Image 1 (cartoon, rainbow, N blue to C red):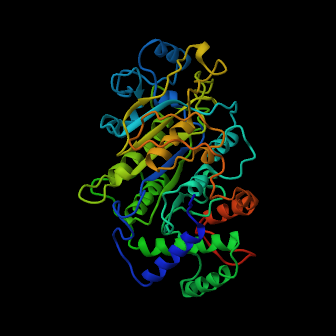
Image 2 (cartoon, rainbow, N blue to C red):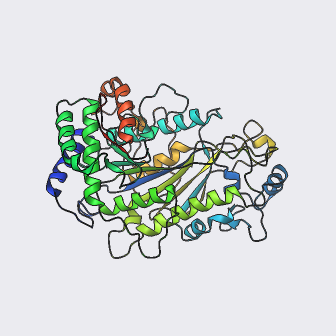
Length: 474
């Protein structure tokens, strides 16, 4: 089974940099949807802190509406007035009033919402839940590699050389990329460069390249990766980026990160996966009453950012980016049904997932468990009825054409498509070790690779105290 090799990535970067030396270019340069196989791209947005899905997608009718209002006397989302929930089709559920931009995409059939998602593990720890979800092995704490890293190791349809396979927005790569040497992490295109006085940067670059070329170990390879990535980005992203006419991203880090991903998609550097975080969801107090307040503003940022990203890629007459890009939004868990004394909500269980894109079959998915006490998890939380890996598996198979679920999600064997996205179905492969992957080598280098991922995430680049690439201001 073939796999994307770190050597191929580095070689491709070096060749491209050599070819582009001294040049700048403004458009898509390295490929197009017709010539390059599997140019589908998966963007994962992680809502850090445990998002309260019961106030994002509240029940607005039926018996559950009464139970919801009783449990959330102060913070329930209203069904009438200026802040009334936006009805989702003919269902008994609505979308928070601040998410009008996403509601429009839902009406256009480009947004799918999967209710009551999560993992069947009893934990209310942010760290533990996020780790298990991003490692892709709920209940197993000894896993060393992330599910995205294992996707790249097991995918059979990737070209042997990709200039930039994976991008993590922020100061470091998330756990989902653990052990991967394919990911470049950065906060902005301007900050991903050699730090230091401009008079010495060429000399620094040459010295560091000679240093990293002296060995083929994890740190040296990752150092070259970061330098190649920085050079590619600097050469491609000079002069800034202008979104499509009428598209306005939120003026915050979330909006800037999504805008940077859109820029990288349009440059066609071979991007296959990207991640971005939006924090602030641990709403133990002051969540907001009657549909307003803090939660309103946070959801408005999420909705505006995702809508801007979609519309920025929805370009007619050129590469049909929206048909090749799928966005999945998730969180580590949901919140309790009952509000607490501080007009907030405490750590819960079941959550929800959003899937956005040109190949999405919009609508509501999943089995709603109900809010009656006997239907709640631990008599307190929304129950999980859809394993989050079922949603991700459908994206892997139908969009990224990787059926190796047993390797990407070990011990998960219950996959069946929900029909969230379009694409060809493939027979799931539940083997835990693809034949072309030496799992022993992956595991033996896990410690070093984990450190590499962290160092690479901040721009990477120095060992033994040497001056290095880093995110300025990090």
